[in-house]
Amino acid sequence: MHVKVVVADIRDKPRIQAIFDRERPQLVFHAAAYKHVPMMEANPEEAVKTNIFGTKVVAEEACRAKAEAFVLISTDKAVNPISVMGMSKRIAELITLTVDENCSTRCMAVRFGNVLGSRGSVIPIFLEQIRRGGPVTVTHPEMERYFMTTSEAVLLVLQAAAMGQGGEVFVLDMGKPVKILDIAKELIRFHGLEPDKDIPIVFTGIRPGEKLREEILTAEEGTEATKHKQIYIAKMSKRLSSEDLQRKLGDLAELIDQRAAEDKIKAMLAEIIHGSAPSVAEQRGGAN
Image (tube, rainbow, N blue to C red):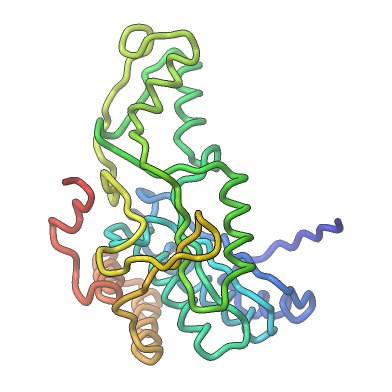
């Protein structure tokens, strides 16, 4: 198979437009995003520029070039989001579904959790900490996450793309969430060592924007089954009209252009998704 690599910034609309005009891709899998939660809490304008407006550029160009399908790789952090990263990916979902409404390209999103071994994944970090003799750092003893392997993620994304008609947010069944602390202990034992005896485990505290537990769906959404037992369709609720979304995105772009304070950018993200800033209880979502 011939592979051609092109370097480009998804925020650069003329550059992306030129690439689509030249290459005319049949399928577009959009995985370019800033994904690290604490980093995006500290740099919300960059999350907005890439995760939101970069997604808008790629989705609209896929549509203009009449690609067969556009698939946004989303995240469980887009469900009831309280972090900048999660809110930016939720808005990326809304953009994808809005573009689909007036486009021959089948536009859809696929939502899943953490991919084992991906950049920034907890397991390589733990392995390096164990190699150095510890300590292994865990944010909170009750922290849980959904995990899947790279091969599982790729296969399910491809299958969702094949079955999607456009306008769906697919949810991948990742089984039960796993405690991060349990992963740390098992990796220590795997090396023939004892947790808290040979290798200390230190709790560092929940980082900015993090939840104790992630969700796959909001309480209002629910799912519809598909022909694949591990893939469901989220029943989306509280969709903004295309006009309302475009207007709010215009307000958000204005804040970015004005180099507005971070709290104003975060407040606008929350307004687009929630109608207002989330409450303290919502920000602790999943902690019950």
